[in-house]
Image 1 (cartoon, rainbow, N blue to C red):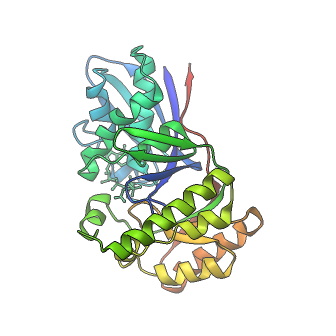
Image 2: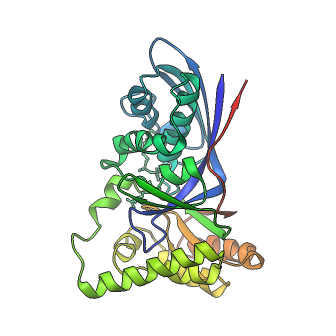
Image 3: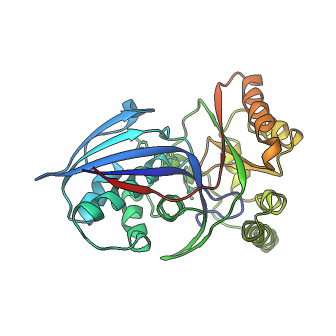
Length: 293
Ligand SMILES: Nc1ncnc2c1ncn2[C@@H]1O[C@H](COP(=O)(O)OP(=O)(O)O)[C@@H](O)[C@H]1O
Ligand SMILES: N[C@@H](CCOP(=O)(O)O)C(=O)O
């Protein structure tokens, strides 16, 4: 049996819509695969009651099909679905790595990224690699088309998850259809600042580079309490705050000594508007890990 642990991820990081992603060192999904004549799926764990076991509707089903690798697949969810923490992408990435090994397909992790992307597309409606790339490769990733660049960055983060569900598909509907030249110039500046910060392990530059005036404001409107939580996190020392992926998760970058206070402030901020939330004190971490029993 092959076991793979694939990490949660935070896509976009504000200024890098559909391009930037980061692997988080927690939480994670764990997947176990065994050869079978046809693909079957069992799901347990966090939010498993909302996840279809039919291979046609689960992200791992499309991956098994793309690799021609039928298997009995057990998914233990550590990442809540519809969270903005790449839950569906983590399962797809884990399945790609596990089935590649189970059937000796010999593909590299980079070659598995578009295959995992096919799985993710079954639920989000479009292929975007900003969750599956960091889940497979780890670190901070820049995915442009089929090319993925990685930076092995070390940045402390807080990911705060309110008890609100927003599907990526719905959150893509509010993305503005176009942008002005002024908005583009602003976004390019922030994205470049963030990338420089990742290369230098500099939380200040990463936080500054997260600011985005294009996609994030539209999505923030879907998250009750977003403005309060953002202000609370900044007051507690966060260097930048943005929507994690398509939301409702909210991501803060910070220095290590402020992480605990920021986590508490964000949970309190959601609490002030009557929304329960939990915060993960985390950091940019490695990609999926594989073991064979
Ligand atoms: N293996 C899976 N893990 C998580 N969600 C899945 C999986 N397979 C299908 N889904 C569906 O995908 C949707 C969640 O994906 P998405 O909206 O992209 O959010 P996120 O990936 O941020 O959690 C839910 O409707 C869920 O039922
Ligand atoms: N770039 C995508 C990322 C979605 O991430 P998820 O973690 O919410 O699935 C988007 O912003 O739509």
